[in-house]
Image (cartoon, rainbow, N blue to C red; front, side, top):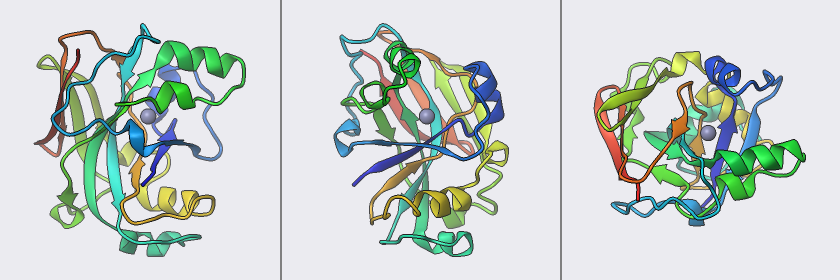
Length: 203
Ligand code: ZN
């Protein structure tokens, strides 16, 4: 199982990190070992002093496919979720400045939170889903999938031209503005369309 992640998919977040607006999706992969086991706390790793949360809408792939046309993309997933793409921002900045790959900053153990899955049929329009992240009861990130530069079906079509999608793969569709640092004892909670899909304690 692999986690395919999209970077810079919301304009407001691109501005926040002073990144260039991409002409094609920015894609990276997290290994399956980065998934934070359910109900486990997130431990801030020793190699970073600046771990950021990034709340993202997730899509779970249900069958094998490659070179998937956008119009057929909906038949490759039934479930939508919410998660966190934890990022060691200090390490990522170092690697980016040297033009090196981001893996260490994005793919470390525990760097992927995957919440509860919901049937996509629960929602009328996947391109109009509200989601948010609370840190210690305060809303720190709010997004709507209508603001994605590349929508779910476009992402599936695009990434499947490079990576064969397999059953159980998870796509992280990018984060809206409001990313920020976590500290020990923080408590993060993510909701999609009003339903809480994950909680994480930071240690
Ligand atoms: Zn992200």
